[in-house]
Amino acid sequence: MKVLFATSEAFPFAVSGGLGDVSYALPKALRKRLCGMRVVLPLYAQVPDELRASMNFITSITVPVSWRNQYCGIFEAKYDGVTYILLDNEFYFKRGSMYGEYDDAERFAFFARAVLEVIPHIGFTPDVIHCNDWQTALIPPYYRLFYYNRPGYEQLKTVMTIHNIQYQGRYGMEILEDVFGIPSWASSLVEYDKDINLLKGGIESADAVTTVSPSYAKEILDPWFSYGLDRILQERSYKLHGIVNGIDTDEYNPAQDPHIAAPYTAADLSGKAVDKAALQKEFGLPAAADIPILSMVTRLASHKGLDLVQFIFDRLLECDLQFILLGSGEQKYERFFHQKAAQYPEKFKFYRGFDTPLAHRIYAGSDLFLMPSKQEPCGLSQMIALRYGTIPVVRKTGGLGDTVTDADDNGVGYTFQSYNADDMFGAVCRGLGCYPQKQYWTPLVQRAMAADHSWAGSAREYLRLYRELTGKER
Image (cartoon, rainbow, N blue to C red; front, side, top):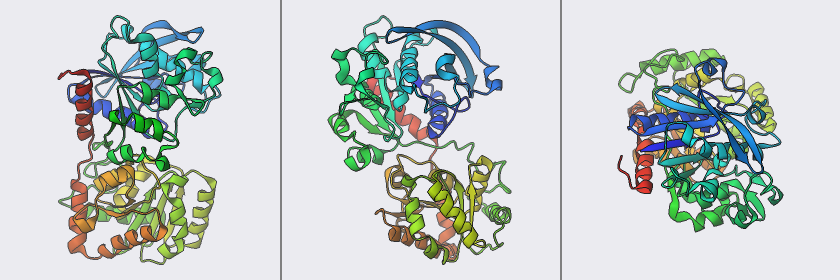
């Protein structure tokens, strides 16, 4: 099985969020299962110089972008056993940012065409092109329109993965032909609600559509979660699959994490107490082993459930706990948490920004981890928290409900269903009530650490899907 994994970002070359991590970890896991992999992404200005030095130039070609023919340099690099193909065009990708440019429509139309055009030049004929989010969603329509009957392309299958349905790539119909090069007779492939919707085009044209958790696959059929795409998803539900993401269990491993004060395992949790004391000292909190630390590592955005936290914040801080929050985002939340940090200096600490080593120390030193999201396609933080024996408190939505079962049912965390501050507070209180009862708490921590959320399971599911689409066993 040969898979070309098309993505707008991938660690370590260019990363802005979770997609970049997935685009590194999933191909790596598939490669370990003897699946032939190539990851293709733009060669952004943001690619570090040391990685550029490791790249090999293959060749250059021209890529049709509507009426234009644009240069495309093809470079190859290897990282962690996976081969990466980086596509160069400085006009499109030598920018100050990866996304949010005035001509993103044209930039990613170029990238989508380039992914298909480079196949004869990279010594790798894929069975499947796996596309990710709106930036690559034009690949399935372009394949249907221009490539399906070309020699060497006939048996290709396409998979479209929706990581977050909120981002769809919507544009006015007036650029259909001039920018995207799609003839007017084929406009139905990408037209939706009188606009061009690139994600809709991917859903319409791909052989299979996946999301990043089984629950999210069901949720996005509902208008409440779909951001308007429920109609096309309901029509194409026969090709919709939910496959939960994983985490890199080598990077997140308390037994050998270089960022934390002391290593520990489920069999010997003594190091976790050391990490807790170190975390309290780092944040200037009173040293108290018997007081549970509740933490959040999150973007400060409304869909993360922060309005629930705001609503019951003072009541929460009346409890016997310490609270640490790491994140940045919307100013209204940053201002609120700065004010509360000043109001409760002995109980609440807010670190604005993101710091990877610090995040590791928070996961390791905390006792409870809060994720009250309004929507969460998959979520990684709850799985990382479990890996570190830090008990997640989550709302049962999307991947949170798929990965965290309730402790009252011999599960690994505390859950609540309704998007309601009182229900969230009740779930936190259940965790706080269990913490002093070590005969229950210690087995809970050990169950959490034993949960398997590695990429191996996700890779098996994707490989099964690829085999179903292609009819190939190998």
